[in-house]
Amino acid sequence: MSLLHHWLVPALWAAWMLTWCALCLYTRKGTRLEGLQSRLLHFSIIGCAVTLVAVPQTGPLAWRMLPPGQGSFFTGTALVLAGMGFTVWARIHLGRYWSGALSLKKGHRLIRTGPYALVRHPIYTGIIIAMAGTAVTLGELRGALAVVLFTVAYIRKIVIEERALAREFGREHARYRKQVKALIPFIV
Image (tube, rainbow, N blue to C red; front, side, top):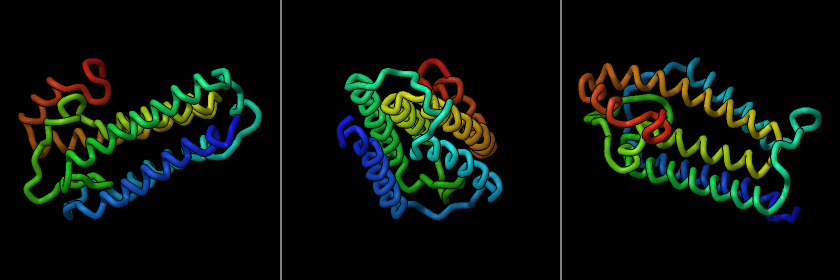
């Protein structure tokens, strides 16, 4: 594989992280609703997944699930870009209401437009899609396991967030839940 195949997807993740950090400068302070233990558990799961895809593996974790080649590389890269684009759209759409830890901002409102009209948690959807694209570019078992770990981590976060949103927004959130799926439009 060429140098492009080895560095493009990691470079996309690095650019996404820089963008994400820059967008953090434009958020409001809020009341935290998620404890330190919960955040640590989330980052531990994500850290394991990132390690799986970032560190070359041997043995069963390196078993090929997809044939190497241009098709896997370009398909995976397209998924990475689509997922990352979806997260950035959702993050910009949330504006100052976004936070890394579950929190409610002063004057917080339930956002139901833009990507939030398609799924209730578009940032998580996009991150999972981007990790799935990364797994496709790798074509190895470790990538599939990373996608599973990301999905588990974000489903866990969805459960926590949905409880908090239900408490805060009551009937409005209940209607939203009935109208818009959590992660995959029209399905889940």
